[in-house]
Image (cartoon, rainbow, N blue to C red; front, side, top):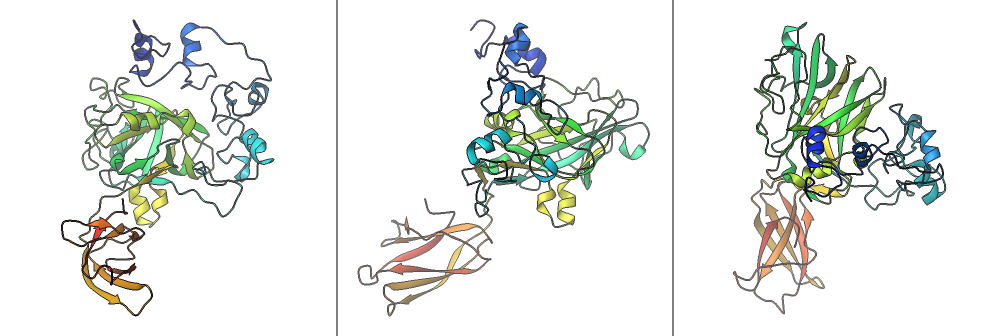
Length: 420
């Protein structure tokens, strides 16, 4: 369409001005949370909805949305499905599922307090658990650090690298100090359905209730290969080179570092926080990725200091859940295999009925999946159905049912990964 290449009812020039690219937003989005869609903002018109309507189909009417305030103190949105009244859970801070939807589906709001339970497991059963894919900054080519620009403390000046920091900060005091959390995820390890992808952060100091912007580095932008040892404010990707020397400023380059969501923090409440999956564009960022790495940044909005745990602190405390992570409720994390599996010995028991074959295996990686293949001739290996197992350690054994009479000659081998 002339002037609107992606045909989303927004002109390309308007999208580039406000979002930095034409394919990061659509007409129905509401990235600034002002309850008006992008299309409404663009055309300057407001659709007239009745108080009993439910345009975002979250089972809460417009009137119920208007009279409800979320944990950040804002009215919930009548046009964003996930931003709905959610006042149950611990300390009435929500459980990640809209109250109206829970009442409609289960009759009350006490069904679950697990914000990750959106993967088809039963939220009304305390024995049905979600098993999400959790990718931390400690995996593969991941990294986390803090960018600082400070006139009051030399250890936080723009040239200092904080790659080994145990805490990551978000703070924006243009008169004195700037703090930006920088994260990189090795998303080549993420597989499966990325629907509802969310960012998980462990907050250990929350001095104020704030909605912090989450930014993503556009795929292919310079500097995606940044490293913790040398990356500081003056060398970080996504910043305007001509403005980084203005002390205490967040010199964000809107053409390469674009907002993709928010992280809502509550004053005095430390612990695990999740970005809202329906109101973020993390899945879109992942879909556009071409090099297997994604860089995110969390910026402060005022002088109130907010601190998050880094992967270094998580390692020190032996608490992996403290590390920054991308959580895919419907996906999985498949780590690179670093094993060299071999068959050490095998034992055939023909006294058993049916015959059993026990293989003693070595060269395994603990918790890695393997399967066994067999063949009558060395060139015809095929997976044995039901032979997949997760290794208990570097050595393990597996017992299979065989028919030694029908197959008097057979070769066996162990292979990385589950049977196809």
